[in-house]
Length: 349
Image (cartoon, rainbow, N blue to C red; front, side, top):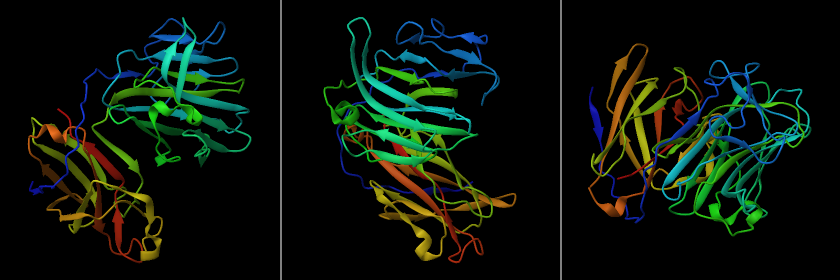
């Protein structure tokens, strides 16, 4: 398979990135029943625990049921630098009642009752809304999705004191200071303190496949599917100074005609490409650099490898590079092109 090689002239950004083991929990190793005191889970206060259940599950056979008095907490000591992703899947039945919350704290000290919230998201069943309480009055809103598993993802950049919240593949509200706290109250710490799953007296809401892991290569918004489905961009080799190159596989290209769009900046706001005839397609990346991809046939579709070399320069640590693949797909829409999800990779040690 041929490689498409590009040297990207990128400006220097100095920051440090600590390395920690990632954490995950899919609740499948527990017997159905109370979780408090199991796997690091604890209750905020007496009687606020939760159960592992098998009535709903994304990965078989358990999830956690957040219901009634539940206020379930898991702490993450030692996460005080670096770039992180907190990801989980959520299932809200259409008959759910009440307002339930997904919360991340930068400080959780129950012994001294010292807390500071960085992310607080309200899921209001009656209104059918998702409201991200963040950064003062700049609350973000989205439409609640029910009766299916939906991705919740939070980008946490402790090195630059920044966070962004994503629901169902779309960013909800603007980015804001991680230490700024919910509603912009400030006083937060540069750390990932804990997750808090708070039922607030609602009926059952389920979580599964929870993860906290270093940011390496992540999607940040949908493009649009083509005749071969979604263009798929997956990590092959992470961007580390030791490697000196980032490598990704690009699959499900509908034709051999495709380009990779790269930039140090996301399109803000994303551009709806309907005006070009690309209905329901979104440009997520500024078109600063466009490189033709060399492709080969793979069944009914085409595939490529994108390789982006860079110098072994410590000043590049923590730099984000954004990318999006654009491919010819005649007849799929009036313009005849489709585009992948927006993706970001970060240069690490």
